[in-house]
Image 1 (cartoon, rainbow, N blue to C red):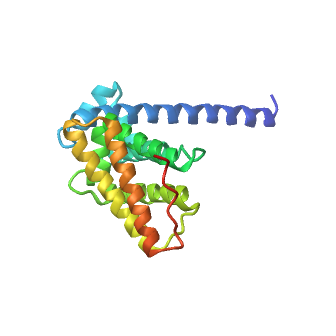
Image 2: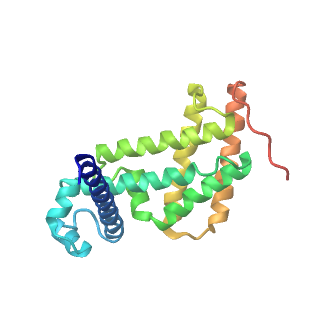
Image 3: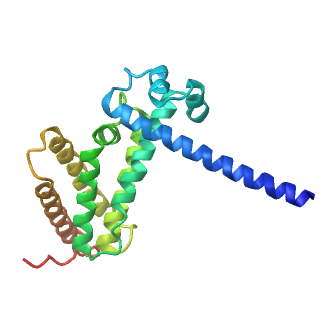
Length: 218
């Protein structure tokens, strides 16, 4: 075997190793999401996590440094899924896009309650890094809404403030709904979508450069 073949073989081996490493890390994050959904952060030790994951504790330290790093990785993974759901409707008409975005948001919260609460409330003891992750989620969701409404993310401060107020109400409504879920999800979606329409029309009154999309037919 010549040197180029040796280098090529090594590269292939490295790629396979990297793929296995990413898969193992993803498996550990998936396990962690289930664990933290049922057990509080403080109640879980690294020994508990390793036992439930069926791995040596050192492997978790290898990928995540410590329990806090593991927890943050789980939150970041949850955030990525939430934002992906919100941004996956860009090819739909505006009204349907908003409805699908809000419906996907509520569905995610319903099925990943622990992760959603951590994202929205700031994690363990108002963790500064989790709060930063939450702010990133808000910014990306606001960008998704602005693109859907006006085709751009660079919007006036008043429009951004009003949309932030609506998004805060979405978080509050979602947390309240998750507590007892007495209302059907479809009803909550309708409530939030109507609220967004009202917010967009209010923005138009103050910022004519940000016209509200036309009302859907009755």
